[in-house]
Length: 483
Image 1 (cartoon, rainbow, N blue to C red):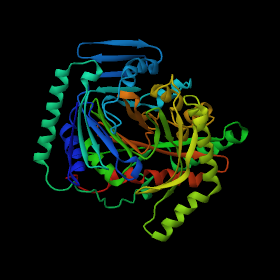
Image 2 (cartoon, rainbow, N blue to C red):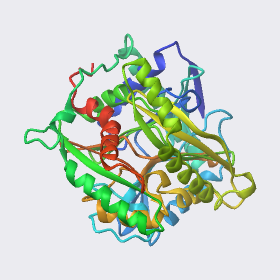
Image 3 (spheres, helix red, strand yellow):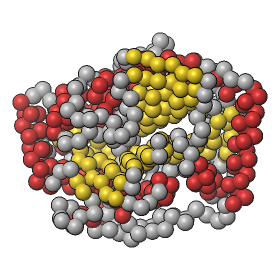
Image 4 (spheres, rainbow, N blue to C red):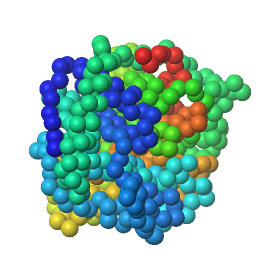
């Protein structure tokens, strides 16, 4: 059941923000948030709360919990996820335009990716989160930013539930939207941070941001990885560092600031167990729609400048620099290989190679790789083939992950994992969980990283991680009111 309403300009964003703030104290509330910063990628956003069921992997076994019971699996958590997801993926589509009309929304941590790759980690996995967590949502809101449409979706009848429940949930959702519209007035305020010169504080005794690497230690780690690469066969390794700071911001306030400081096409906010995962990701791990699979690896970054001439020069340098181009091509080639495991190899192609996408704080080098899904494969198979992403591990992937685990002092947790959905009719869309903040017990934590190759300059690699951190830091530390 889908009800559709035309909305005035500006009303959709106000409604999305209002619903999110109304639901932010409910566990398992989600917002898959497209900021419309890249036209083709920013059309739809989705919000929901109160899942009908949960599927969770805690590192030992996978559990499915329903109000009326549950089920457990030992062994491979993706096999368990497939058992739950495949009836949804094989169901008919409910709408010609809307890609997600109900199903599973959640995340996989990078630490789970290590296990799936057969890499034994020296770190405690999860960072306080389950390694895999999805909610089954039979009621949700879809915002069509391009056409100014609001879709209220209730689909329990398409998941084996009753038509009566679908009608009840649709009525509840309509009342929630009406309550928000009655309370909201005026445009949603933008977040304009007062710039924080946080880089000057790093490694200082009074620093507000605490890192797990000092600058010197990070440079030494880069040099050690370069030594491993020169011995072969490794070509590229993605090294990251973690920062953390105390904050009094709520999850809702911090996400309002993050999407203002760093709008992105694959943003997400998930509340689970009183903790928050807040992502401003510009990168798509993969999507599936009507058997077409797409992945959009990012490799190559330059900071933005307030000087238009310098900003143009930085953008141009990104497209022409031999090191960035070589790094990027390595990852595109690996993406093609991985798509070949789930797609007809004759259909795998690169329609967009090394395009620059400009965001508020950085320019990024992006390619698009597409293929046609094989008849016996589905979106869970795509997860198995592509996760974790090549752009945030390296090449060869498993060996790069082993080097990463030895070099980084803490587990990555959600960082460089993936957040997204598996939906009715076979649709799926997952990000790469970069530019992502975890908020738990008054502490905000995030990681930033970059690719290391034999030709890397350690100091430049360190500065690149700080460039990527800029929007996250401004969201956490800069002054600015959320109302």
